[in-house]
Structure formats: C-alpha cells, structure tokens
Amino acid sequence: LAAAAGPALGRTLEIKQLDVCDEGSIRACLDSIPGRHVDVLVSNAGVGMAGPLECQSLAAMQSLMDTNFFGLVRLVKEVLPDMKRRRGGHIVVIS
Image (cartoon, rainbow, N blue to C red; front, side):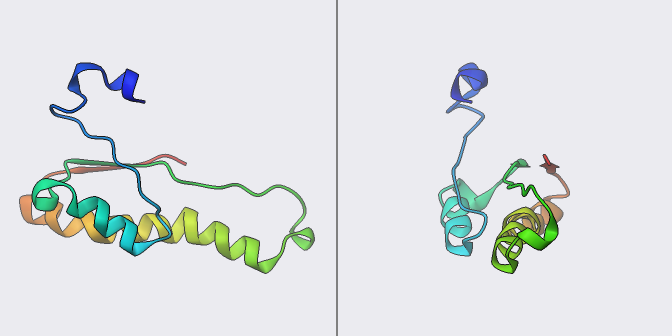
C-alpha cells in the first residue's frame, strides 16, 4: 500500500491502521490526525463465512456482523459529523 501511494505518502496522504470493532482504536486513530480532518475514508475491513448456516455458530455470525456492518457504522459515526460541517469529504466502502 505504501509503495502504491508513492510520493503523496506523508505529504498529502496518510495511511492509518485501526480496529473497526474497537471504538477506542477508532478514536485514537482519528485523534492522531490534525483536527481529526478526514477528506477520504476508505473502509475495506471485512470478514467472510463459508459453509451451511447450520454449521456456523451464532458467535461467529455476530463477530462477522460486528466487523462487516457495525465496524462501518462506527467509522461513519466518527467521521461524518466533521464532513457534514465542512460540506466535503468522501466515504468509500469496499465489500
């Protein structure tokens, strides 16, 4: 990812790591950005599940939803208020 960013990395582009299932991790990541100013959020966190439904545990399904759905909700809730105030920004969801 850093190689693909090229010369923009560190100048106009920052790559951050966080855990979408941990609100503290999300806040700490955003707090590390000056003014919590995010122009583009790319959310590509996700997990999959294969096999028949009756073979899956409820805990595994809840974990999947916590990452794939609620993880995105947590991120959007953190960045959207500032984007709305500024009337600018983009959220890209990769599924």
